[in-house]
Image (cartoon, rainbow, N blue to C red; front, side, top):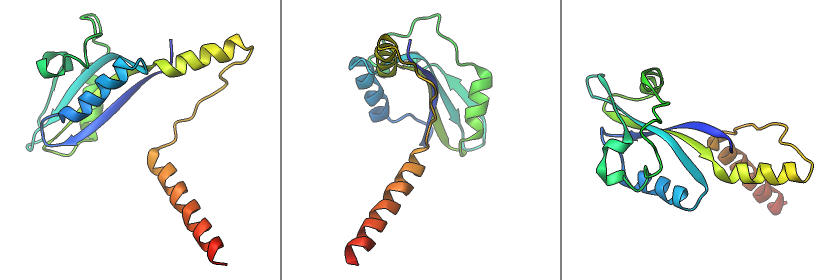
Length: 144
């Protein structure tokens, strides 16, 4: 099994964006990730929090095709934690995913006698800041 991660995707408004769920379905079909469980969290404009399972939405059947009825690994505590990050009048899609591609890569490393000795998640905004700083440095160096 590859690494498993809980990802929270937040959206403005109280309804999920179909394009985001479609992208998840595409990753699943391509064999890059496996959707283990999901939970939709809505924070109303008055601050009330409600949850539902993604599998309850017929329009997302393609994304949730592999989730069995026994999943339910994301629960009320997880929803409450996600809701704390939401603005009133917004929603989030919580995904428990297995990174299948990473599992295949780790298997190949182990078969070659190696091991995965650690992983560190780097926030995307840090990567973008580093790229911008590099571009600026190259630009300045090119003028000198």
